[in-house]
Image 1 (cartoon, rainbow, N blue to C red):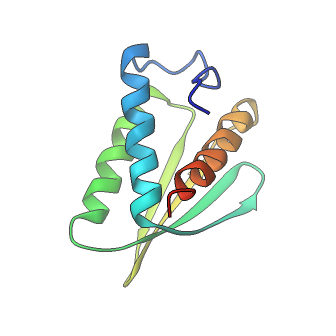
Image 2: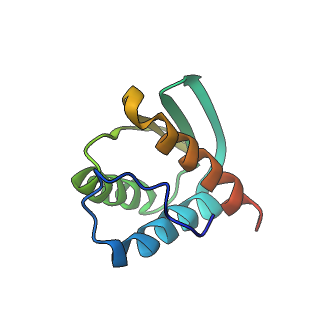
Length: 111
């Protein structure tokens, strides 16, 4: 899935920066993802291992992502050993959420 054709036209991140952003998400998944679930079709819940600076890293990433892809809604719930990240989209962007789920699997192949 190195082809970024799944990125919707509504994303305002410059095209040349998109591979770098995808790499940031992949790195987060490889380093911190412990579980994921789909409690609703338009919502993804990620459980990320907490640690020094992890919550700030997640907040920075989702703030930048929300700035270019306004169709995402991110909710961060810090906890003891985990930080939960809920990602929701509207119906028109369900395929983007599916692609994000696929990215977690691609990133996880290096575990």
